[in-house]
Image (cartoon, rainbow, N blue to C red; front, side, top):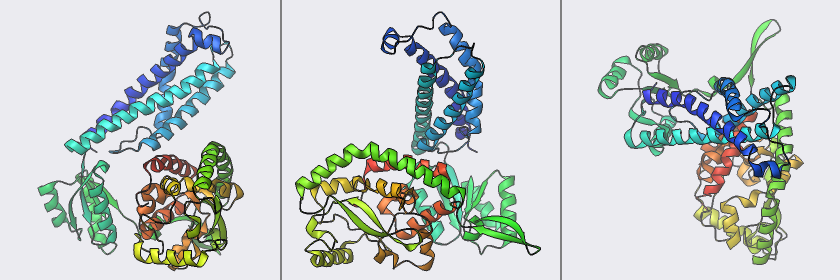
Length: 475
C-alpha cells in the first residue's frame, strides 16, 4: 500500500469530522436567522438550547457518524476513488446516522429537537463531506498524474487479448494510478525477481490459464513476502456465482446465472416503476419543448416513433424514441419513401459504420435533422423510453435493446444478453457509450447480469447523468 494512499485516507477522518461539525453548526445558524424564523413561522430556540450547547451535542454525536461512515466503506484505502460512488455512500451513511438521531429524539422527547435543523443538517453534511472529499481526490489525482506520487508499478503476466486490453486501458488512463513496467509470458521466479530488482513491482496481474500451478503458488508466496499485490483475471467459471447443495445423496453445485431471480426481480421491478414515474415527471418539460422543435423543423412524420427491438427472452418490443431523422429517411413502413430509405441506410452501414461486430454506428449521419443532431448527441431522443420501463418492456438499467437484424448476427454466447430486460442505460453505456466495440460491450453487460445489485443500478444511473453532459463522440 502506498504511503500517499494511507495519508489521504487518514486525512479523510478529520476532514469528515470538521465537515460534520461545520454543516450542523451552519444548519443551526440558518434556522435562527430572523429571515428563516419569519418565513417558516418558527420560534427561536434561544430559550431551549444555546449554540455552544448544540455544538457540544454535535461533537458527542460525531464519532457515531464516523463509525457509520466506516461501516459503509468510506475509509477504504484506494489509490483512485470514484466521486459519484463516494457521494452515494456519503448520502446513504448520513441518512442512516440521522435516522438513529430521529429515533433517539422520538424516544427521549425531553431532548432538544428541530425537524428543520435535522433536514437541513442532513443536506449540508452530505454536501460538505462530498465537496471536501472531491477536493482531496483532486489533489491526490493531480499529484499522481504530474508527480507520479502513489503510482502502482504493475507487471502484466500473459500474452493474450485481455492483457493487451489491460495495457491499453492503463496507458490511456493515467489517472487510474498504474504504470506497466513490463509484460511477460511466464511466472518463473527468476524472471519476476530480475524485473523486481531492476524496475520495482508494486502489483502483479496475471491472465494466463496455461501457467503451471506450481509457478503460481511460488509467485503468490513471493508477492506476500515482498508486499506486492497479486491479482489475476479469472475464467468465466471462476467468476460464476454458485450454491452448494445435496441431490440424491451427492454434493452438487448449482451455477447461478444472475441474482435477478426471485426477490431480485421483484426489487428491480419495484425500483423501475418508482424510478420511471419520477423521471417521466422530471423530464416532461424537456419532452414538450423538444417535440415542438421536431414538429417545426420537419412536420411530415411522427414526433415519437416505435422502433422494433428485441427484448428479454428474444421477444419483440417497440422502443419509443423521439425522431431525430428526416421523415423521408426513417425506416418506417408508413414512410412513403420506405424502400428508398432502407436502401440508403444499407449503403451508409456498408460504407460509413465505425463499429465492429453485429452492431453498426454511422458517424456524422446525413439523415439527421438539426434538432435531431443535438437531441441524439445528449440522448434526449431516448427520454420516451421511461414509458417503456413503466409499461414493463424495459428496465432503467440493463443491456441496450438491439434490432432483429443485429441479434441475428449474435454468436450463441451473445444471447446471454437476452436473459434480462433491456435498459434505458447500462454499464456499457457509462463505460464507453457507443465508442465501445460490441465484444467489449457484451463483457460489461454480462458482468452486470452476473453481479446485479440495486446499489449498482443506482451508481449507473448517477454516472449516466455525467456521461450525458459530455455527449456522444460518434454522432
